[in-house]
Length: 108
Image (cartoon, rainbow, N blue to C red; front, side, top):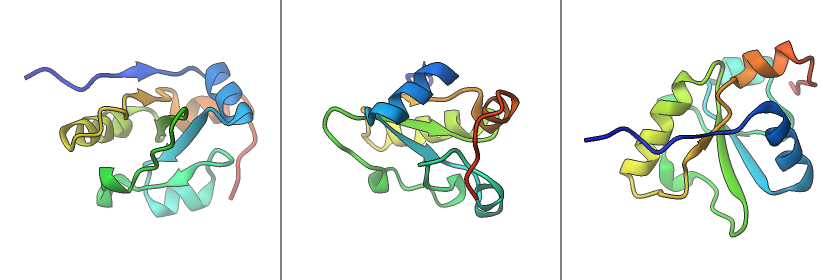
């Protein structure tokens, strides 16, 4: 059995996708992390209670998963694909660490 299909989005691609509405960002960190600061517009779906069926599905929009550093998003991608969500293949591998390091705005 091979691992999940993984497509990486870099910071510039993510910013463009969020700005033009072509991407839906899903933050899979836990509540305390999300509340402490998240990427503006990110939807909260923590990995601890992750339900692939609850993830958004909008034609023409790419769902992108994000966490702190990219590790949890890989687990979430695998869970989503095993649950039949073949449309969930993309993550922001740099996560909040890369977002913060680039000095991007954070919502609380």
